Length: 79
Image 1: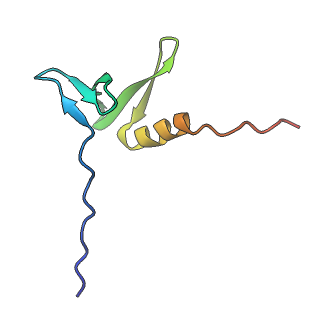
Image 2 (image 1 turned 120 degrees about the vertical axis):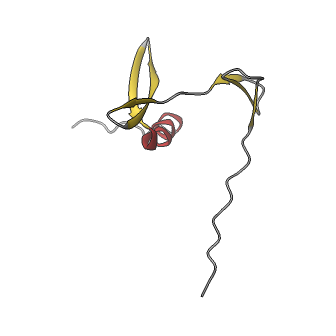
Image 3 (image 1 turned 90 degrees about the vertical axis):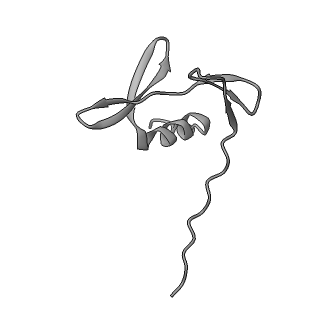
């Protein structure tokens, strides 16, 4: 029988600012933690698309969305 060890999560790279909803990031900037909105038993987060437009996505798609923003794919030319 082999022991499967659960990989440890890295330590958070932020510090809670008192009892507020703000955090101090490792690069020195401040941010506010997102709070989920529960609709029909599903947790969603509201993320900004810019120009005052919000997008509601599920918690499991947040990392995918952020990755797409940080690593945009070049557009293919239309034939």
